[in-house]
Image 1 (cartoon, one colour):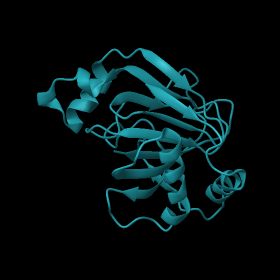
Image 2: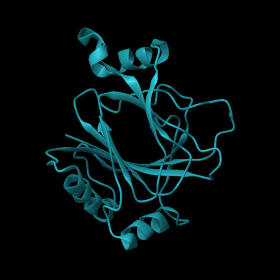
Image 3: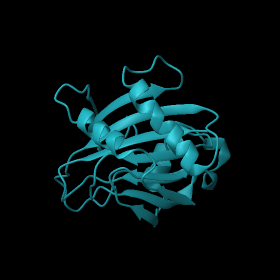
Image 4: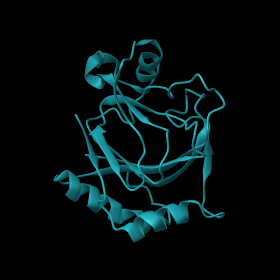
Length: 194
């Protein structure tokens, strides 16, 4: 099950998030693969705002109000914040690639919220498989990578980035980002939580 929430934060905050992320001196970091470091075929730029209680980035206080807005829109309590990561995908040179590698962000039950910073054609794709479809004795990063390469995934749902909206889904569901083709960027703030 997934949810889409629109207009959950003030328009001025929507504008400022986009403006700040597109500043020349925003601290973006290259990553070999936006889905899993071991895949190596979905490169992009990221900024990790928060990661499992490690000292957060200097951008955490600016992004933190978004968490409360998601909590209110979803009408549930965020008990534990796992990670906040901002992702930047540029257009793909491979016009035949439908989406990046199917994956899950974490091996535990959680929610994944994608806040779309800009309008884009870089869809978020949900698949028909979840972590529950895998044998429990194999639940580790290596098994996930292998499963992602060998399982037959069928698209369950696609959500196109709409500026200022949030796409929320069960984090145990395999999903993938898509590089834009018609737009010059896909900017998403992904928030994982329990």
